[in-house]
Length: 418
Image (cartoon, rainbow, N blue to C red; front, side, top):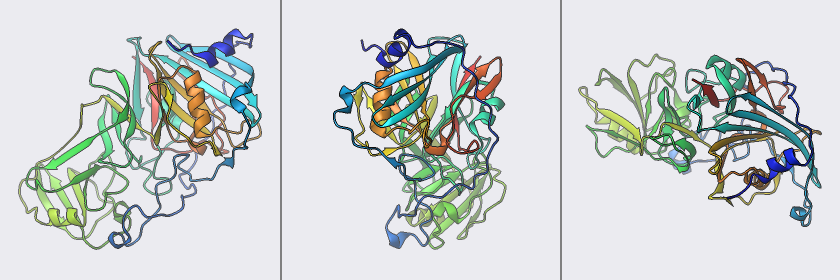
């Protein structure tokens, strides 16, 4: 059994434990954030205009972080911890914040420990109502009656706003998914057990068994594949989901289980009353053969998990740190599980300021490990890093987001009370 050494040290070392002063709520912001540098996701001959690339694992905004200074034998030099506060946001939800300073500088951290053994607590993933939309974490949490929340998946910033990976909600079902490329997830199994690992998306079109259906409600269709778009996406997408590719693409509209339109051009901005299938390359060839008539389209996640939220990379697996990047310091968000206490650990680290330098990936993993996490996943960071919480339905921003206003993001992991 691994003790939660960092949190125990914070409380038992004589640090002050007092009611936390709630941070002021920040106004929302538009989605006009800096787009990441462009790069190819597929061979150049498959794409006309590559469009913005998926960002690095650090943050959706693609901002290069402050380099982490080299410190010899820093693990032998314990950080000095101070300014600890702790309070209960309600039964089973404890918020703790503290400051620690080491040779690299000060860091302010915020932790939500959520007791999953309580029958009255539920985890959920929420979005602004549509997959291709953004909103700030505070608004999404308030709209769903949450006790607390943190920002979720990396997302297609400045374009569609859609999450990069897989999202499933216990209340709303599967919202978006992709076959490969961004599938490392925190999830709850069919029986509600928290797990970490790869999530498998599967789909098929009965009338075209050779077709490779690669996405549902994704910010782009994988080259050679077919993407499904439903009303949960929003309105019909345009060439942004084919990365600007306009040749060898196909759009099929399905209503009531029957094909009602099959065309070689994408028609954006139209209401989706049934399904829209968009193909690229070989996927477009398969869709071309789908004549008017029945179209039986099915999709699912292997294992039928109740909840899924993807991130960039596992930080810890079975208690062992999995990351090696100790070079860039950023604000960070992570989710982990302490198997001994049956608590989900939601952590944010402030950054990009004089008061808190941020963490590298290695530092984030080690902090989660010290907090008792057996597994942990890196979520979107940078200006997206946000934690909110409160009592009796009055939510406040608990951390210090690095933008001057709350950033609009794709989704949030929320704690709800039944």
